[in-house]
Length: 229
Image 1: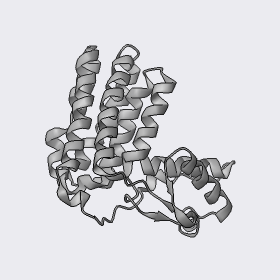
Image 2 (image 1 turned 90 degrees about the horizontal axis):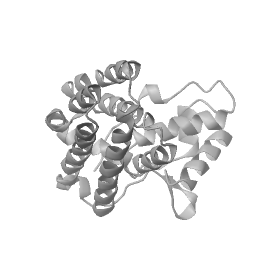
Image 3 (image 1 turned 30 degrees about the horizontal axis):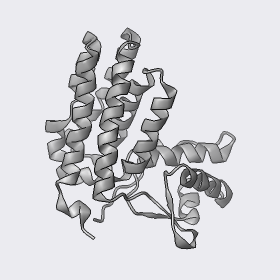
């Protein structure tokens, strides 16, 4: 499946502060997690250096780090590609995401105060308009910080790290939601999860997050075009 999903500008962070390769690594990692690169896309040092207005050296260092942690695939000849898991692997990772992110939400509920709710509501307000406008790039950009902000309140750094690593592996396939973006509003449970966190219902909030992940996965899995070739 071919798509034209460009990198959102908010992921290309200013690279003026040292160390340059670290900032480039963070920017690329965020973009991959949020589905801003097409699955299976070949990434070249020259292309990325031009995109981020930098020299090849920090690009190579950032790519090496992402390959080492499984965020990018390196194939024969040393070429680097964006992850493109098969249908079975994608299904397995998304189910694991649902379980672990529900756990992180459950843990976070005990630590979310009024100030945290203000932050989460602000992030959540950016999600629905993007879906309503059928703007996939903005929807994905809004979805990731909202969910990860919840998980940060879990206070479990190990769990958070595992969740981020799973996002790296399947984030690119979220771009497949473009064919079903009009259905996203019917299957996302962001508002429900936020309401449950506000009322202190940890179990209901966790269940809402899990349903959101599983429903999104089903939209992608059920479209045969996503798995052609």
